[in-house]
Length: 285
Ligand code: MBD
Ligand code: FE
Image 1 (cartoon, rainbow, N blue to C red):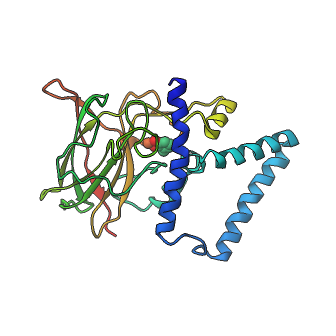
Image 2 (cartoon, rainbow, N blue to C red; image 1 turned 90 degrees about the horizontal axis):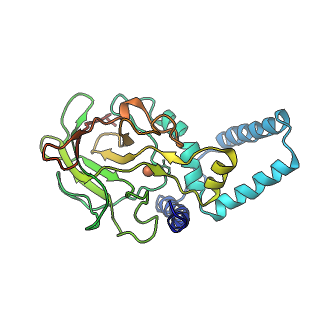
Image 3 (tube, rainbow, N blue to C red; image 1 turned 180 degrees about the vertical axis):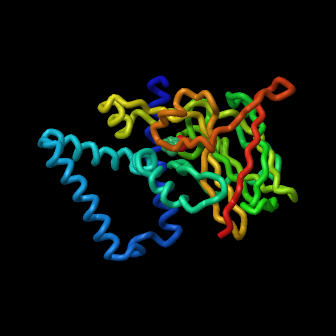
């Protein structure tokens, strides 16, 4: 990552904040939907946990002011979506999906957009003519937990380009680059033509990067594919899939890897890229 490339990354934060606010506005906002007793209970617990840390660990004014400055910077850099999705969403997802019997979910992260181009059951994802990366054919079936194949299910995929940039968040990419929606055929099958994703670093030039550097952590996520899979009458699943052997499968900065989410890629018989199979199993609503 050279300076120009990392400098571009900061824009992703501002875009992620703006897209999130638009999504919340489109569902009528969220103020008032959580009742007073629950807000009182949770907010009291959060404030107490922070106070307990200050007392137990004898946090100094220097440290308190560093925290204050950093929290302000998270906002001005637009990195609240990034911060929360990297360090907190995995627990929210664990709670939300504990009841499922079908496919494992994992976090959505900050870079999903609804309404990506529909590509039939077996189309090619939008990409630039010279898009760098190894061709990947990703084939599978969407089924219900009882085994019924689900036709007309929606398989939405989004992933970063070879440099780790997501279209409509990082600047300079075609609108729907590496984002698409497939609709399963009569047998519930889909066949996605895309590229094998590269290992990914969260933006390092904003507040989150500052925390990572100050704490001596790393910014890496393993290479991943993001999915949302849905069908009428079934619970939508949001998940990600990973590739064996990635150096960050065991220390994902976002704690979003699970053993069930490992793919098993093989070389394509024509020598061009990789083939992977993965089926999605949906829980009834
Ligand atoms: C990503 O691409 C991502 O998937 C997550 C979870 C956080 C930041 C960037
Ligand atoms: Fe991602």
